[in-house]
Length: 327
Image 1 (cartoon, rainbow, N blue to C red):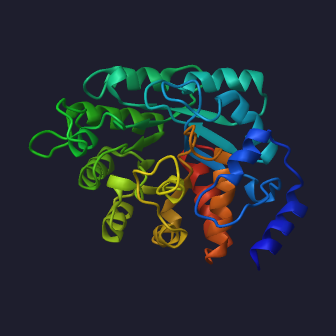
Image 2 (image 1 turned 90 degrees about the horizontal axis):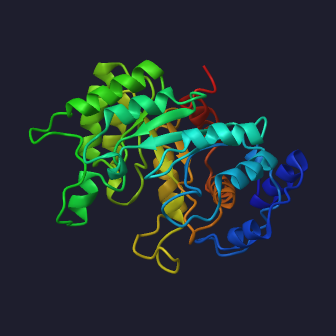
Image 3 (image 1 turned 30 degrees about the vertical axis):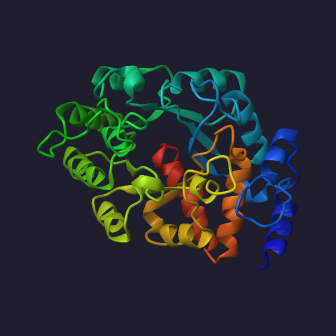
């Protein structure tokens, strides 16, 4: 099926989406395409779950706000969204959004960064899962404040570690794993190095965490080799691939990173689609609207021959299971 036929058939199935002019402008700005596309048709977005994206309110400038974005995703046919803030809780806001938007399947998550202390904060994790509504569906290990990222950026101060000096998982990290196991929510590796992630997965398997995620295994300094990815899968993990690297790079407002081609991205998602999922990781003020990004991702994967059954696993079934929608 040609890309044009695919879009037309999706339009017949799904009808039209009338989003804001900001979304249309953002869709035109999607990088690495070579042509403008019509993002007004939404059939291909039915039942999509994007479980890693950023929105306002936040400590960084974002392109969308949580309430407005949820309204747009409901119109677009999304099944669910899980918000991520590097600094603040968003599971409590998800509870309020659900009161204002009946039927909205929005969830939140919690990152172990310095706003919660200089080490992984067990008490904060405990309170996150106890918050009204039970909408915290993921505890991320340190992200922007991770020790690995600080070392890579050659900062003078220390980041938040997940392993001790002997390479063993720190006791506070093990306790957070136990909290995730008991609550049956995601334990995510955050911005840990590939090697650190493998150590975390071994311990998470020992602890009995069922929903373990290796965060953006195709992105920047966290990129894993195919062999490392297979080791992660053998340890019971789900692998997250973010579409953001296909949009940043030269000629964009995030030129410091090397852009990933759709062929390279597809090679990652083909490694183990039954144990993988795709998130946009979008919401940055200088990047396309997350809905436009998700649609572009699906279109491009279709264009390089990724099967519809695999796409359904990657953007629908697997992320839905991870946030607890499907048993």
